[in-house]
Length: 242
Image 1 (cartoon, one colour):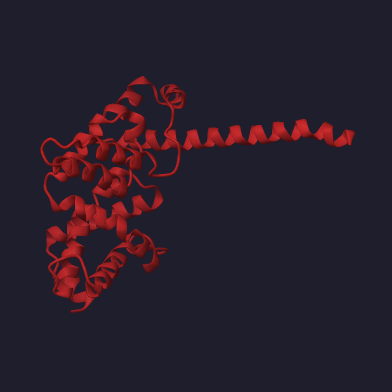
Image 2: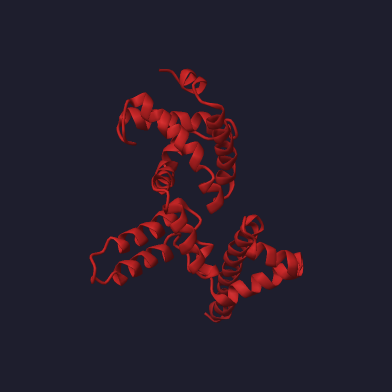
């Protein structure tokens, strides 16, 4: 079965899902965000099922499945980005696997939403990649699977630690977040900032969260540069005396 044959056999609904996948892929490639990743799931499911049918496989395993899945994803990714390569798709496959895992059980996305609601803002905005989403939901499932009477707190704490270390950057402090949010209020106005933080679709919140992380990283880098310059200036007189 060729790629052309597979593409021709997609239903109208599946083609609509694939259209959404292509647009989400474009946004994910330019700046990863939780909602964009999650909106890729229906399209990924269509491509995964097609690859399984091609490979005559019941699970997402095997060389034939993996090669066809990668080829199909690339075919649709290139509709919105000419620069993407098979190597890029291979690098993204783990993320796609986590997304498909989240879709395997109907309650996993519900668990994800419920757990995110429990997190403070500075932790919630860090759950923006399929790996961190997977860890959060997996920790809940593992805790629920614990025998009665067995303490699951150690496993939950371990999961929380993994989440905190996910992107290798320190969690923004409340002071840092407050400064950025204050600037946002001045720039956007109180109502728009509040909508960004509380809106159900998180469309405005996405921009605010990304700006927050960007500004915090820039401020930290500026502080490091200033510290280096101060150190160099203090060392200059000592070199002259010598």
